[in-house]
Length: 238
Length: 238
Image (cartoon, rainbow over all chains, first blue to last red; front, side, top):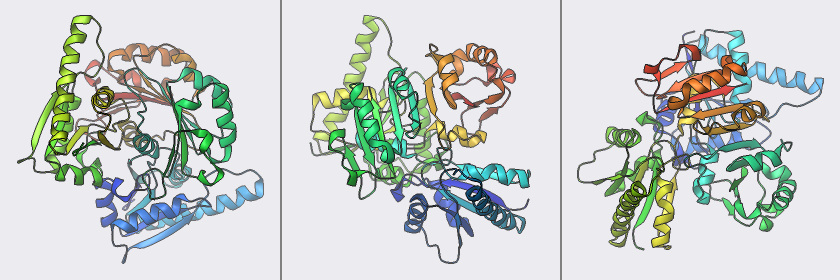
């Protein structure tokens, strides 16, 4: 496989949180794939990159795929088609000796869309060369902006997608720091659970960390519907 | 307080993984504090920075403090003195209108030395302005180099300092991804535990991710004493 695929984490939103390596590779790349989903991540990734470099002359491919698996055979068939189209698009460029950069917000290994594609790419061509360039995760950026630390010394950290509510009590009991990702859809239940466990005053709500419309709210009772955002998390620091 | 303290995560080791923001602030800073401990992190942070910018003309303060709390009153007294010296050094510069940059490897909120100082600084002067610039954590960098992802969809991630062995069985059962940090001193016990739970083939050992002497070993049975390193972790991906 003559071309190389480089997956670049472009950081949590502030363009200046891109790494030097990410910037260099994006400048060199002639083709950039941008995941385009129903949710906001895709347009944010492209806007970060377009603030930092001149995209004219580069091929920008907006590759549709959704953030989450969906149920139902018909819909799944449609998703498979979309994914396969993206996989074929990447592979055809690599075959034609074109290096491809694939951007994701935050860090590629933390709940990014890329890993839905990864297996399909390797299934179709096991010889493909993939390099992953890590980025600043929104988890660390949110902690930094909120003025809390995630861990020190022997502390244990748990990161949970907040739609996974089972065992939450247990995890809240056993860990020193609990990061609840993407809380917007289950915020009321989470606040209730934290109230029950008398952890509300140990929690902070952070949305769009480091961006212009960032929200950092230390009193969860003051969080209103208009504060809720796809790019949000609750950090519980005991 | 006229001066400002900026704490910068310089990333996991590869100088190119510094952020654009970190580089800009370090270039502007006239004074850079480097934590100097008994362990390797301090010299690595300074070496990353010195590969990226000209340090001549800048004041470099090597501030001694250890990575971990130690036991015993005499030793604790000595540590307190060292920490207080560093705190006074930072505060005196801020008072004299000198901006201070404080560098840590990886990300400042993830097991960094800085948070041992944070409270003392605020105790002595609650008006101090502190900005935390997040960095690429070794956790994400190690996953990227090893070709594993930390989480997708509803998966749960646990990060444990590996000297905290209690409840390890439970955590290994309940989480999808378990990151065991700084495994070098307890590697044999960890390998034994993973063997017992038939998780050995789900684990990868990563040391010094992204550095020239990086080690990525997928078969834990092949890890020898000479592979063990302070900058190491085991990632278990079920």
